[in-house]
Length: 438
Image (cartoon, rainbow, N blue to C red):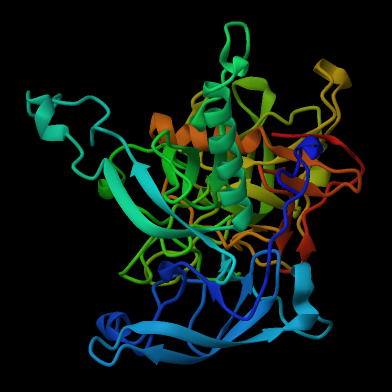
């Protein structure tokens, strides 16, 4: 489909063939210059394509990189020879085989269409330009516009663009442009280029030179270069439309991280429960989230304040394996700091009539395991979501969390309805269906 939630937009054809383009950043060359610079190891958390390893082409098949063809002068990879596994089409994992966790975008080479991308970013590097230096020009972002040529997009994108260009030209030379008619603009044609942002057709586009402008990024953060990028990983964590060559050189560079992958959803076990001394509606919990110190030794359980008094009995909470968010900024609730947040489903009623059920994790899942979203790369959570922009990330993710008709916790983004997954299967609730999660 053109859009997972708007059937009226129809379907699109996505060709698949012998040769495909992938983003350079989706392959890390262990045996080339970048591998040598990194000690022959992939970057921490890299889940995409490596020599001799497998990855899934999104919506298509699992492939394995068998051989790397190199430039004779630079030793940089120019082509990857891969095997395809036909039995893995459309997300299928054959019985007895391990699920391939890495997923990358691609465009079929012979049918892909070339275009130019104007990647706009913030004009200023600081949220308040000049606040520190007194000169706002010192905070101008010199990287606010990057121009990428020879970007490859699906043929359906090019066909849509050509239709819009032709219709605009016809309108300008006919009565369709008369007052009272809705005027068509190039920018009315918009797309999400996955992992890169939202793009609109530029008015300078012609049949021979399509141009797309990035109008919205996928992230909303300030001063990201100075912020810690990764949340500290628990020791026992269980690792779990494309722009073609747009990213260009420097393989292994970090792509844009979707909101959902910035949230640290982890498995945890409730060890203790007690009433809150200052609020009848709150309870205190001790939660084992699998945290370890620098020496790899277990840290003390986290204190969590939850508004579950009268909703779930203490007996039903003790030793329960649950889903928690571990990278939200700690918040004081009636004098006690809460160091994590539990996720629960609600039937939406208010007061004493409300039914609340925690999201349940299979008992075999280790504390601290980073949960994932179905058919999405493993998360790359922020160290902590504490700025105004970063906190909006959780607000956006929370608005898309729901329990489906089978009692499974899901995340509904622009592309699909994705189950929240553990190493032992999907996250579920005991009996509620078709309801909100918060």
